[in-house]
Image 1 (cartoon, rainbow, N blue to C red):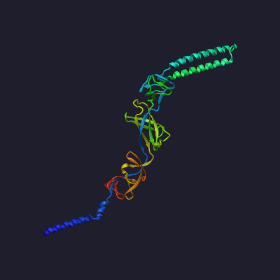
Image 2: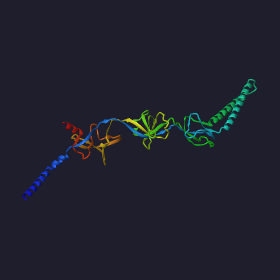
Image 3: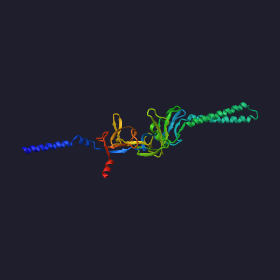
Image 4: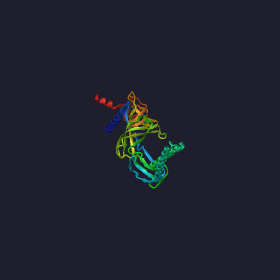
Length: 351
């Protein structure tokens, strides 16, 4: 019985000694053990970046073919999708009446010329007056004008392609009677396509005419080099964007107006501070990072961020060059905690 009591006393003493080892001072020492983190030293630098914008393949020269004289359509050779050359006759109007009037005007001009010639021969013989000569000259000019008018009307009865292109729409058919300026066909200059896009007004400073860009056409698997050809001088008030046009070599017959494209523009930024996105913390008052003070302790630094650039984010304010921020090792980290960087650990192992 005495041996059993002695054993119990020894166990209790051991527990008390163990309890003494877990004193507040020892616990505090463990809690204040430096935390291992990864850091990055801030450096402001310029970067070559790229932005992507939605775009559209368009035909800048798209016109509606219309008639300049009234008449009845007797022939429309080309249909939607047909390719035409400059000068091809697209539409013919009934010209039978005009042809008859042209013949009449031709005869009237011939008679006026003969009358004028006869009177000029009679003037030296004093068999015709000056008034008759003046009248004959006037008649000849009127006959010439009438013939010119009929020739123009006859020419306008055949409507020709003003440039080479493709018929995108055929609005009427032979047999339709048309008044002046009726839409007949839509002609697209398909071999002179461009790309249209729009960029934010804040981005305009990074582009200029003749700047090289890349045009991606996902539907066709094409990557086409191009150049900015036009920067519109006004901003769309509803979107705060500026339209631009990009030209390229039209050597891709599979490209058609209306195909979706993507415009890739590379640009160089001014020197700025970029930090890893994963280093930024957020709370109800905004964004912040863990930085390191001169005592190797973590501190909370409030920052104002700008645009995201790949896996980086721009810092507009709150950090400066040579500041050190923590990029990894956040678990259990809090402001005021002593930290140990990976470089500190490597240096210790080397010693």
